[in-house]
Amino acid sequence: MSRTGKAFASSVAALLLVAGSGGVSAQPAAEPIATPYAMPSTQMWDMTSDVGRKYRIFVSYPGQGEPPAGGYPVLYVLDGNASFASFAEARRIQEYDAIGKVIVVGVGYQTDMPYAEERNEDFIVMDDPPPGKRLGRSKGKSGRDEFLDFLTGKLRTEIGSRFKIDPDRQALFGHSFGGLFALHTLYSKPQAFHSIVVASPSLELDAGVLRDERDFVDRLEAGKVGKTSRVMVIVGGRDIDDDPEPARALADRFDRLSGHGLRVRFKRYEEEGHMTVPARAVTDVLRFAFAMR
Picture 1 (spheres, rainbow, N blue to C red):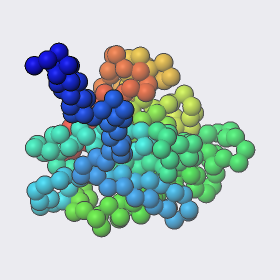
Picture 2 (picture 1 turned 30 degrees about the vertical axis):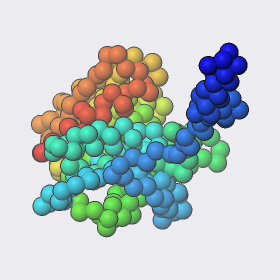
Picture 3 (picture 1 turned 180 degrees about the vertical axis):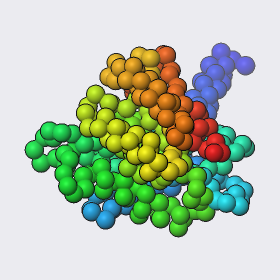
Picture 4 (picture 1 turned 180 degrees about the horizontal axis):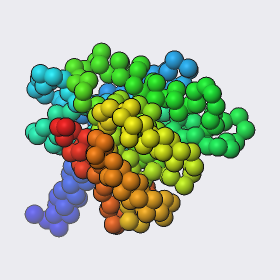
C-alpha cells in the first residue's frame, strides 16, 4: 500500500473510533433524577385534634405475616419528625424477632424540620409562660392536657381502626420536653400506657413537675392509683443541656416506690449528649417497651 493509502486508512480508523465513542462533541451522560426515599412498611397522614391542633402521624408496621392473636403492641414516639425514622428502621431490621413484630407510631407536626415550636405548648407547663402561649397552669386544661387527650383518644382510635392492636400493650417514648410530657402522663393517667420511657427530661425548665410528682406519690402511697405504667429513665453522660444527675435522682425516687407497684429502670449512656440519646437508646427502648409485665 502506498504512503497515501496508509494515511487514508489511518484517518478512517480514527474517525470510526471517535464515532464509536460518541464523537468529540457528545454531551456527558445525564445524571440520574433524584427522587425522595420512602421507607418500606410505613404510612404517613395528617390529623387534627378535637381542639384544632394539627399533627403529622408516621407509622411503621410489620410488612409480612399475620398479627399476633391479641394484636400488635404499639409504641408512640413523640417528636416523630426527629425520632420516628430511627425507631422504624430498628423495628424493620428486627422483624424476624418479636421486637420487630410491633407497630411504631411517630407523632409529629406538619413540617420537614425535626422539631416544631408547637411541641412546646403540647409538652410543657410553665408557672410564668410568655404572653399568648398556652404553657401556664389554670383551672381548665392546658395544651399538655389537650394533647394527652388526643394521644390516648382520637389518635389511638385511629390506629386501632387501621391495624389490629393490643390495647394492653401500649407504650410511650418522650425525649427532652417530651420527657416532661411522659412524666405528666405517668402522674395524670398512670394506666394509659403499660410502659413509659422518659429520656433526658428537661426537669430544670418545669418547676411544677416536682409538685406533680409529690401529688402522684401521695396518691400512690395512699393506695389511690392502682396499677401504674412501668418506667424507664434514660440520660446521657454528656448531657450538658440537662445535667444527668436530676434524672438519676428521679429514678432513685421512683425505685423507692417499688413496694407500691411502681417499677423503674435507669439507663445512662456515658458517651451521649442531650440530642444523641434518642438514637442511641432505640433498641433498648423497644426491648423495654414490649417486655411482658
